[in-house]
Image 1 (cartoon, rainbow, N blue to C red):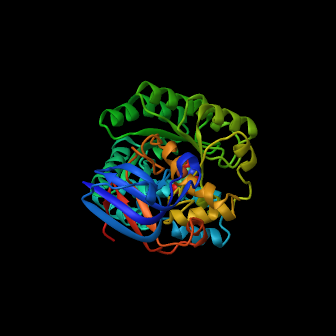
Image 2: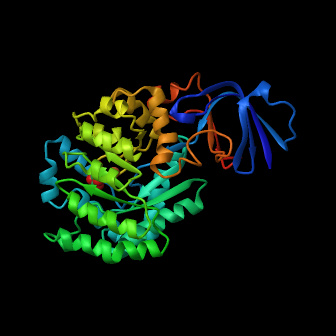
Image 3: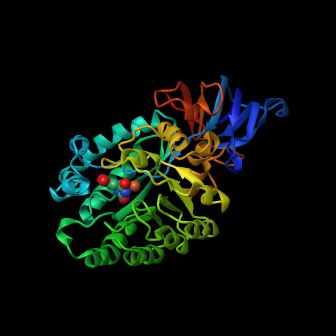
Length: 401
Ligand code: DI6
Ligand code: FE
């Protein structure tokens, strides 16, 4: 089916800039963009449908490239405790933190995990998200990680949404491996990852490189296994301290290194050379009341592509709005609204290995876009959450509200 979408302005985000086309037209053919440009340059064309977008601003569908959306329970009780002065270390020593989410996740059925994640995914979709990455990492054993990845696959099958599944088995040390981190890494490399990859449940492999999680040497073993399995890698790096995980990620041509508050200029140079995207997570920065900013000047100076994501997770970023993250990227990380929008479109697509097909509105790419009832593109980073009036098109088909 061929459709002409007109009476709109476009911020195509080609090359990661607004690339504005005023009074634009878009022609979609089945799920792809066949033509895009100024309306008066289109000429006569035979289409089956014409849609009047009422003067809306059209952007690519938003892409949330780093989330932990599937988990059991939540940690609002810990949030209350922390506000009363109980420290993270005390909460963790009492069995809280990631360990409590792992317990709740292991105990939950696949259907219960699906139902709770569905609500969160629907919240993200109300913000114009059409592509979503979701990590496992709260199961930490083969059966439980499989359960999470199956829920992630099911979300992608049931919803009008492109979902990428990342295996984050190396997120934390499960209790049955206490004091034996190397043995757990060996289990991931020898059994868990090969099995889940063979089942077609994994699109990419991630790990948490941190003094309270896994060392660069342990992460490297996971990366080598991913390479043998033909899977791309990503890394949680430099969130709380500088272990140069981001440089390690670059050495393995990682799609992205994420968090990065404590990275340095040498890490930025390594990432730029490898084309590894910097995924910044302003929700976690805010929720942890972090004061160390990622080195924005070094990232810009060396031309590292910067993506923004929600990091939606129960411990450090219970963020249900990607547009709110745009605002925080501007207010907290000092990004411009244009950089922030590129961070949830083209650069987020690249961080998922989808830069060739998603993330900008160009001929041949998928027709995933949002027509926003706004005055100018910066409005997307300006409003603090809320439900902006919009129409969402995925694969050339308008979704009902
Ligand atoms: N970094 C984070 O901020 C989260 N995971 C990670 O690797 C924390 C996850 C949690 O506390 O549940
Ligand atoms: Fe994360």
